[in-house]
Length: 203
Image (cartoon, rainbow, N blue to C red; front, side, top):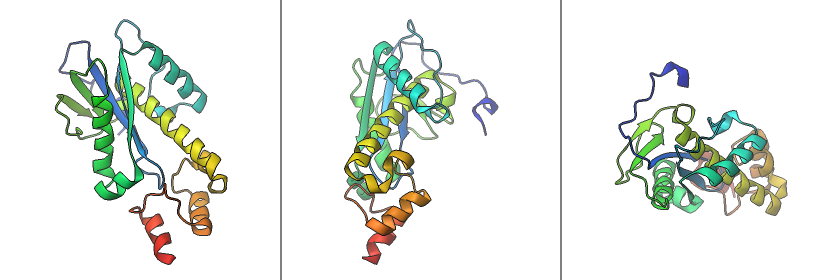
């Protein structure tokens, strides 16, 4: 279902400290899963907020700067590849979300979390399927998380240029899988993910 197929979003909160929460990086084979939490300022709306995947990198970066300027609060946090391997990606994603929520100042009073599950935080809220296309605070969180994780992948690409991280951002593309087979796994690779596990078992 597309975002427009859902009924209008009804939010059970009327205050100022509503945080949108989203993550990026559940599917890649390498690097952290990154989450962001954003409390937008109702008096300073930001045009163009939508699902980060629908935006060009240049547009995301421009919106990232605007969100950081205008939001009442924002935070970006992550769970490491080691945490992903020990907890599994589902629990590590929620850990990253809780870290981002905890880092907000002022604190959130209500959460809107992209997806179908809340991350187990004490702040009340609701899970919103396709939330990054249905509420600007979740869209803002998706943009901050995506820009931060892409920057991580560019930094990893600078250290290990033969893997192509700047292009595929760690996702299991044919280029990435071929580099993994040719060059082996890096410490930043997620050992619990099947293609990496297979490659390690071949050694």
